[in-house]
Image (cartoon, rainbow, N blue to C red):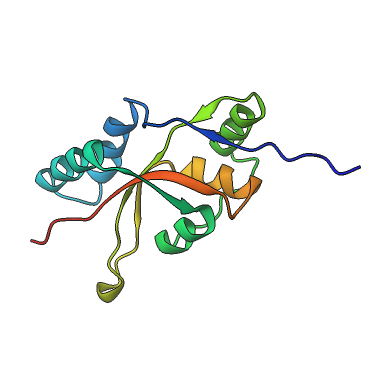
Length: 131
């Protein structure tokens, strides 16, 4: 008998602490003025849905193993029926060889991939303003 794979469930909005976490990460790769604009945009962005495998590819990110402590924590949440927070993303620019940036939610993307690489992950996605 095949074991049923748990399906992740998602919250309709990111957790409040996700935005400061995104700002902390983005401050490593963007100037402060851009971080503030991006986080403000993420707070207002509509929810979109993208596949885990596409997010990893667009971000040029490696799939973390299921036993990574943070990925394992998210997988345990899914098994308990807890809802995960949508991920926060900054659009890449293929013409300029700029990858998608996962501002918050890399571990949740990896956990979702381990469950079903084709599952839609809710996300908020913004583009960097030119300049």
